[in-house]
Image 1 (cartoon, one colour):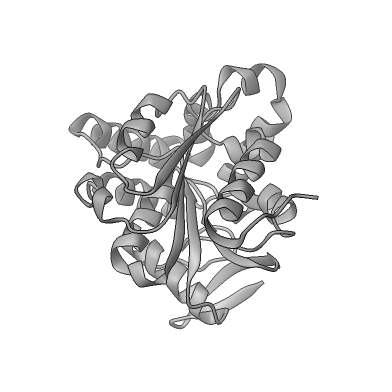
Image 2 (cartoon, helix red, strand yellow):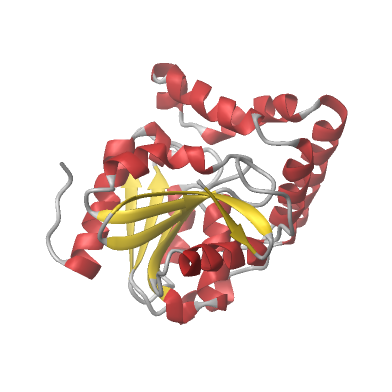
Length: 268
């Protein structure tokens, strides 16, 4: 469905009941990447997803990590939710870090999947600029083709071609203008490392064992700086474990919710 926030339309999906769980999608995808979580976690949580400005059903608008975090907070307010578990995959994790800094009193917990705490290095920023030029010169599809090998572990590339096709279709639907804005937002994001010790809610850090972009060892290193964090590595998955092995991803999230927030729960 589409709701109005600050005079602008935002596409959201809401399913289930229980602990509010808001998930923020990765680059350059849309909320459709969380369909397996809307389906699989709706028995244990009220799962909420939304499209960041300019993709999916959301109208264009300001697009920094802080802007995405503010949209997330506005979505919660629209749904009458004071506090929620905020989760994000890849770019969504960067926005979740921003939410934790901007609205810590609205957090029940954090879920950070295949993301990193540090900001872009100069080399990383150069890579974003190169990708932006590719989008401008050859289009979104060409850029997505370059990104695919970095999204998936070899197990998915070899044995789950339907997952690759699904992610590619979602990404190729992104308008070029939104992709360019997201690339700039990724390059400009702040370093979250200095504030890791200030996170005062239970935190689940999820890594794909075969993530070619962000090694599980790197994520485990910064996860250890969060006072109440646990690190789960999902075998045979890469950068998008929620799509590559939804059952394992959902079990990790459900276990986290049960252990830290709501008592024993199980997936059906």
